[in-house]
Amino acid sequence: MEMEQLIDKYFRAGRLPHIWCPGCGNGIVTGALVKAIDKLSLAKDDVAVVSGIGCSSRASGYLDFNTVHSAHGRGLPVATGVKLAEPRLKVIVVSGDGDATAIGGNHFIHAARRNIDLTVILYNNNIYGMTGGQYSPLTPTNSKATTAPYGTVDRPFDVYDLARGTGATFIARATTYHTQLLTDVIAQGIEHVGFSVIEAITACPISFGRQNKKGSAPNMMKWQKDHGVMLAAYEKLTAEEQTDKFPIGVLYKAQAPEYTAEYDKVIAKAQKGAK
Ligand code: SF4
Image (tube, rainbow, N blue to C red):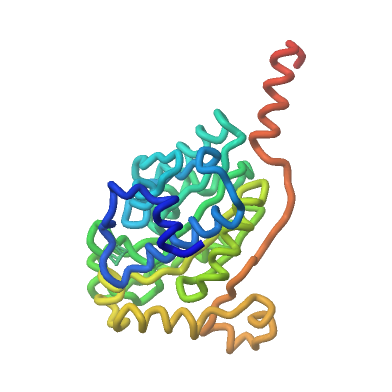
């Protein structure tokens, strides 16, 4: 389906135009999400999109599914409630790096630990964009931010390590340059039964790019092209070569008991009165 038809089918025309800055990658990630849903032929009523607060979290308002634009960092607990109430739904959480790993970090680790069947699309633009360019837990060390005018000293999380260490059973990464890959891994994440995390590396040319002299939006996408390497090729690089690159594609996949299915067993036991 052409993008124009996808927009007609999956976006709320009355909510457009969107508020994202020219050159922002958020539209590309959101476009990849609707392409993935279209590829899976999911009925719109069978999809719920939940977001927190931030530039990327605005996506829930633009999309024509069951949607909730919740509070900052709280997309995951709201999505957990939606999933427990209606397990048939494909529940997708759109979240930024600050939303998912700072104020929502505690929710992230416990949703991963439970392996609840949610798909998190983590729009990683390395900064709090909407609130004015403060550094987030995914801002690289030595970056400039409005809260770090001399450069950050914090070490950032690696989303893969965070998700893997806390129990996620599907972890993938792609960039807004690698759009086909991004669509594919989002589709795989939605199909996966369990907690899936897709890190979408996206450019914020305004709040991150300007402060860190990253050049224009196309330059920032070229950086993604030059540094993202498919996992199989990345593993063949020397340790020194790897320091300048990051792996993309499906990084981890496993099966484990899924939370809503396990919870149903508890309900069945309680209904029988058995302990
Ligand atoms: Fe996109 Fe950054 Fe503008 Fe937010 S501030 S809309 S992330 S370019």
